[in-house]
Image (cartoon, rainbow over all chains, first blue to last red):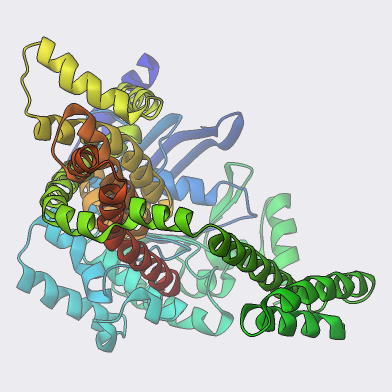
Length: 268
Length: 298
């Protein structure tokens, strides 16, 4: 697609590749479209995430939240439009996506821990193989991260022997081990038993307090209100509403947002 | 449950032990009665009925065999002499043992190349490059569509006309590798594809390349899953090495055939069979054990 290359080159020129600074967006999504066959999951998303922001993305299922999140680290390729991470256009062919992913951690709904490795080895695998640091350094750091998520005693346990909440905390530690600048959370509490949700949310709250830039797709409205610095409401592949969480909850502007919140907030 | 079901089983057992003919007949008769009752009522005890009837039939067959042997002593003697002549078996043993070492060597050496080559083809088969996928698919189709014996002949004779002079052993290794790699590639592919795609995504999201993710995350899990089917293939391979006898490699089957030609008895081939069973039966039990263990830990 020559049009796309032209656009991205132009946009990259404006932003200046590598010219990222703390007061420019750390993630910048420009006119993002994504089609799966004939189904258009994303119909033109524009979104800038500033450093240290915690952006909470809500919306009905099928609204494109997860697809947008997966476009941010290139797990899905954009059909049209651009995604800039710290100034680098990841939709550009010449971009080394693996380098960018080192800076973008992701936590999944289904944990996706590596079942053949212990908790500690799950955490240290990528630093060892991608960054090439030595075993001792990786283990030390891995143990520190497991302690941070409250699982220092589970370092040698295999994922099958951990509860869902513990597995999800290990996978947060695993993502943090690469020292990411941005963390993506894709409905990370949806597969958990209700009593295990809070331990994962607490870990995420700690992370937000430390100043991590986070994009969080979730159905946990309490978390959005307490921790979110910004709330995005998506529906049918577009961003419908974007604002301060408190304000969006209490005074949603768009009828679709009003309808969504009236449905889910009525039974809290 | 029908009382006839139990009666049938008891008669079956008696038929096999103390009262051959009558017990067997009664077991079958009772089984018929029980079956009729059970079908109109609750289906319970069908297992007993099947067991009783089977024992009854076995009892009758044994009786028939016994009658045949008593009436035809000469025939039985011929049979034992032809298949189990002790002198011939003893005479064959050292040669067969030497041949079997060649057989095992052929199987093990081939298997090493098959595993490497098979994995490689599997990786091509699932590659994102269309050309690689095409080449691998054609290879697998062609090889799986041809008889192994044909592949052995083509590789040994065909290549020698082209100026490659393989020894019989090397030609055997090449032919078995070419053939079995196609089957084992499909097993590897199934194993790799059985790993949830979230595993690859998680690995890639950490900045690992496709090949790193394959090597450190996907393959360790996939290989563990395919060990039982790969072991089954290895057992098949061990048996199929006998086909290499047809290009003149002195493995165990050829050794047995040569002795048979001299003695005009089948006994040496029975000895060959004994050697194969010595390895294949324990191997099959081992595979079953591994399958059970894997099913438990998954």
